[in-house]
Figure 1 (cartoon, rainbow, N blue to C red):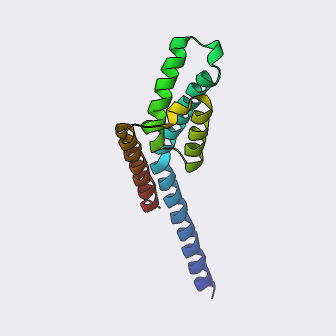
Figure 2: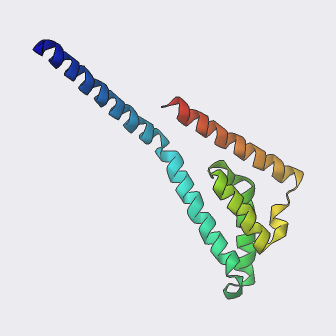
Figure 3: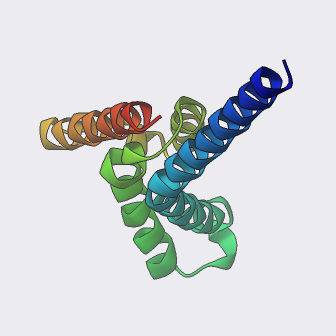
Length: 129
């Protein structure tokens, strides 16, 4: 009986160890995506701060921030953002400059491409679990 109990305990411990290793590998595999997301979020916040406080920035700073916001909105951030962030980007744009929410055909294509890439990240993460 003792041998059977010891064997079962060892199997449980080995199974727990393998699960922890798999979790660690999954976290490590997602690290580049998480770092990219953090970088994009930081860039977005800095850009939004300029647009939200345009009265204390030069016209050239504001114009550069509008261009940067457009790039983030149309493609770069779309690749890594959560649905909640995507919704807040739209809301922010509507308040700051509603023209930022309208897209040309080329911009819409870039937006769609970026979201498709984001979906592939999600699929890749699910397959590594």
